Length: 198
Image (cartoon, rainbow, N blue to C red; front, top):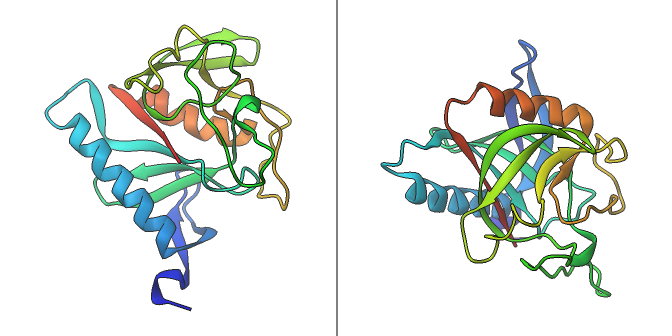
């Protein structure tokens, strides 16, 4: 086994407790991918006071949906500070296990890749949700498609052996995890970037 694939634990400090918590195990390849995505985000937001330059949300769609793949990333210190499960769109599912497809088209029910700006909240079908504004050609129809960040009671809190439920294209997360994400968004004076990649 190469050094790159050695397993290590990521230690985070929970904002809700005074205790440090070991929350998951990743390989170095995952950490490197997130670091590279963070570099892209930093380059995008540099000298732009509209966006939060301290944290970003990064979703790695290469990771199976039953495993943590929604990461809260500290852009200043280049570390993961939280993580959880997130569903992808049912239209992104293929017949091949582990392979997804993506679309920006209305009624595709698919996840769209790219960077989003997290906008204001509203109360909808799933309660409090956050509007998403696509910032790239691959996701610039997100607002028109009603793609939002929302919670759903059937998304489990802990990691699973099998894939979790699917959405209609929205990044859909667990209720308890949503509470932590909600605090970050509501306390941010600038827009947080959500980056979905594959």
